[in-house]
Length: 528
Image (cartoon, rainbow, N blue to C red; front, side):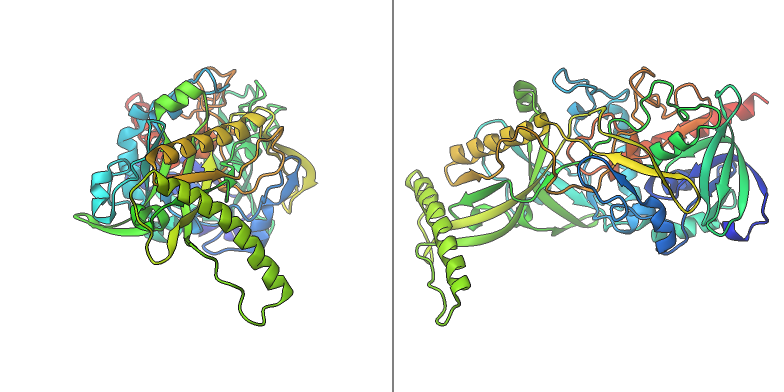
């Protein structure tokens, strides 16, 4: 059932077993899992069913580090950011969950093995019809992986959600669930704890029209996204002055993203037929379970990462362009500017030709149709080292509800850039050893990384998981340390960010939390 919070009588008090704050990927996943369970659920969403500029403006804030788009990177209405995500999915690698001695603050309190059954369930939620994230034989009709030299670089696969717009896809499930009530246009302004801070007593809720009401849950899940999760804990400071869960000063710290660099290198190959189409574009493949959209990428082996002590990077191919034996002259009547561009391109192509001719000197591949070879662009996304100075705090500016806005200081380290540069060099070795290709590295060595060329709109790490409350905000069960009935869901839980998109993993964690909540409420009921 759906209720417009703006229509409630002012001062309404709602009692429920579980309150879920935020109806995005994590919140909807948990609500669906509990539908029909007999556990009463209040799902509280800031927006309605459609985008609304006034509600979206609640995301505005202050930037103190790397320039970053606070409002356009997420959506504040039912379905959350799944209303505009791209659908890229693959699980994290086992090494991503480990404590790595070369990655400060690394290590999850759960393992990849712990998450594997939930990854399977998350695939179903996100409508992914195949588990073949690493099985090249599943896609052999479309081509084979590049036979790159060495043991440092390998082909892996992204599988795509349609993408699932969870607000539309699962709205009927929430509407039919007799034990779930979703309150729209309703903003939690504070999670209010008991006087000793040991449990949540109530949620203060307000609408932009001025209605205020209260939710009293037996347990609460905070699922408002990687930035807002931290912000709301910091705003919940009437009992704990530093904010809930923040006795060790960790809430908001370790904000991570996936720095994206659109052109860190140029890949040159002697023939485009050597590169499977699924490296270069989204490819639809028929499977017994239905069509699957997939794409090949380059990633780095666990042995390589351990040996070199580097962070991960994922590389995808961009559109291809032929390199001809001779450049075509500018068209008759071309302007001076067009001629200058043609001259510059000719200089660049001359370098490419010399590199490709070197590659051809070590292979038997003949040139065809006047082509020396092909130039492939590449895009990459990298893992960021956890950094306590990269953080979310509260601004002095206030939003329309009178609450301090977000202040984001996203900070990258020299080690992040060094790791990417080293990984590009590894790819160059793999291509060079193959013989049919070469790599021209364009990403320079850097003394510091103060401006990002791009990002994934992935907000990670601000309420990180850790067994030790001095190292994290929540425990292995996603419960806030020191608070008996407050849980967190979403990518803010991630102690490290891996190098792949977070949605599959955050849904898997949400499903795992759902199972824990079912067991918890069952124990409580049996003890009565």
